[in-house]
Length: 265
Image (tube, one colour):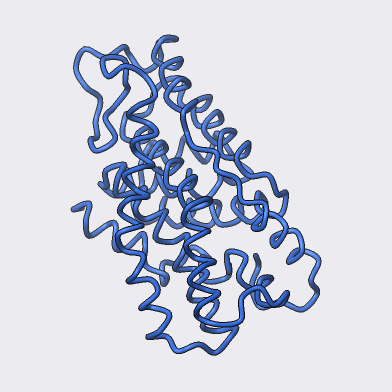
């Protein structure tokens, strides 16, 4: 499948992977009065994109690279390590639970749509469900997308989910909300570019497993099961961004204890 077409499918809110059930913190922000209209929502979306959006985009790009490299003998340990990187960058237990729920549903859907050895290995490596951006990156590679496309899909869904939820929660004009998303177009591209840059600048070019915009094992690289190969993946992931968003963590924890809610998170 052409990567561009697959990218549209992955970013489509109608993809049966449970994304419509998550508000990305907007429901709790509305309940607390932090988001009351389009102006507040615009600031919320920009803040979310600059923090959680960048982190998830980088994780998705990293997962796409790993999946595109094939199914190495040490694939299970590499997927566990990458998922642990995602876990370490998610401070809120409620957000970790939500990310794994979304990841589990997306992985199940992707394995039916784009069967691949990488998705099977990921499912074995993280049976409780990988973090959503890890599953997204693996699905993107299996669908024929490049890492930058995976990063763009992750950045896009980090703001479209909350935006769509806000329409339902506040009764906002859908056109007005989509104008806010249109205003983020340049920021979305910049986020995807920065996500890949965090990988490409991690280690010297001649030691990289892949360049962020490309796929496939390159001739002359160490074999997938080689200890040096695994170490290079670890070094590459060491530079993944870890931008924190304490407000989102607090909103997630508050939402978890709210007995009256429309969204899972």
